Amino acid sequence: MKRELQGYYTRVSTVGESMMAFVPASLPPDPPIDWTSELLSKFDRALLALGRLDSVSMLLPDTSLFLYMYIRKEALLSSMIEGTESSLSDLLLLELDQEPQVPLHDVQEVSRYVSALSHGLKLLNEGCLPSLRLIKEVHAVLLTGGRGQLTPGEFRKSQNWIGGTRSGNAVYLPPPPDKVIECLGKLELFLHDQPEPTPILLKAALVYVQFETIHPFLYGNGHLGRLLVLFLLCSERVLQKPMLYLSLYFKTHRHSYFELLNNVYQNGDWEAWLEFFADAVITTATQGVETAQQLLDLSNEDRLKIMELGQPSASVLQVHQVLTERPIVTTGLLEEKTGISDATVNKALEHLKRLGIVNELANMKRNSLFSYSRYLDILNQGMELQDAG
Image (tube, rainbow, N blue to C red; front, top):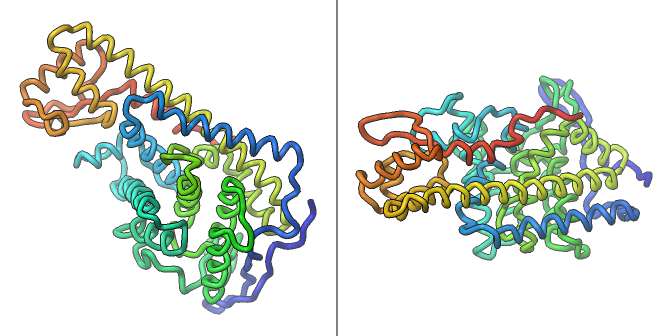
């Protein structure tokens, strides 16, 4: 459907340069979304995929163990879009107070994303609705101590831009600072089903674009937009746990992703964006189910090997259980998590090494480092994908 420009341009001046910044129209789109049979079908399939992803927890012996890694995978993939270089192993090493193999600030940024997601979910569980308050609190956690630490938790009071080396040659200029609060106020009304209720998956897709278009913070908008999608889905119990990592799809289809966002506000082509968003949900939810099944299969396969050990199997199974939560672990942490002695932990690790389940990464007199390598390999699948257009 052909629409007019989804908002208006207004002139702004910064450091002697005069440019046109864009102020988006409020949601929902006008005229309404044109629900073709193909678009409806994709949204139905996306909701089914989310349902399967949500129910996968019934297959897992302990969802929290798998959730620990899923959250970190989403954090890493989301940070890759922002240009951060960090691997799952680097993050796990940082959390064990070990030295990662990449610049420390990159890994710390990913770790802050994990903390921000956890904080947002905690607020939702305490009854806080998706709102500007939640967004600001999560942003404060995301940026505190980071390279964007000038204004953590504060909406911007100066002009920002996307692309280019300065505002004068930018690809896109978001609303000027004096329009940000007005735009966000209208977005919050839409979040709270005003002027009318909106189905949750459609709401998440529309809100994501609107948030990116407003770009209300000086830094961290990309992270916050992707977190907001998760918060919306979790708040409506479409997902009980944040096991959807859209960043993988966005990263792989980066060129189309930016082009579609641009076409929304320039040409009002919401339908093309919604098709892309539904495809992202279908693909990533399906991959999430497959990954969970692979992890479960590997865990069960290795548990069977362990049970064949006979008498030592009880303590070895305890150590293996911790490894499914922390695939890179120190002997000290294993002692803490299992409550068994260092001698018993070391004997269990010897059994696991002999069975080919763990590898020793570093041998120290105290606190040696071990890796559940095949488990990590499954979690790392897709992390090296290149731009698919």
